[in-house]
Image 1 (cartoon, helix red, strand yellow):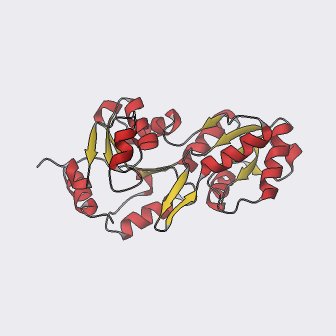
Image 2 (cartoon, one colour):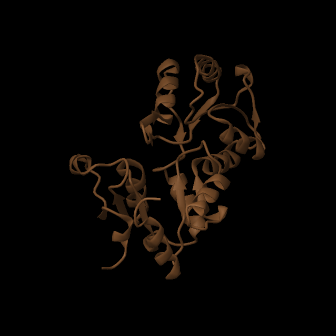
Image 3 (cartoon, one colour):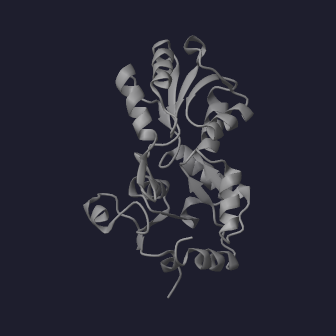
Length: 238
């Protein structure tokens, strides 16, 4: 837990405010996120977790129910798609849509199947646009790298990316909160996803300087958050 985060969340909840946790990372299920937060001292229901996996399942159910998918992604995403009624296949000529995601098991064979499927007419969607995933050692290439590889060889642009900062993600968050955008504050450490999504939705947006964005990166960016926080406690009145 980052310094002041637990105590700040406790104060917000004591004042009757709803806290929802939004992640672009599809490599963990919602249950895992809820359990981790609870373990860290912030008791959290799975109903307060929204990730790009859940949004992707809903997106596809509305547009291609029961579709046959080839997923460039890890097992948690694949499992949720199967539970959503989708068939996963590696037979390129049978694929209705290719799903690109953060995939630490990415190999050339997967790229070949995606290439063959899209050239045969499959549609092309992705879970999130992040270039890298921060880890203690620095970072890991994220979904943007997978998207770029598939786009480069197929000469086909991804049709939709459902995670932050997309309208698909923010609509799902607002439905979960059951609140208008003007009554919400988006808080996160990335300008191009967290802050941008909040601002586009009509929310106030607070940038945390405890993660992926430095003060110098903020100074160089055209994206201007409503607030800049050095610690989560800065959300609270003095």
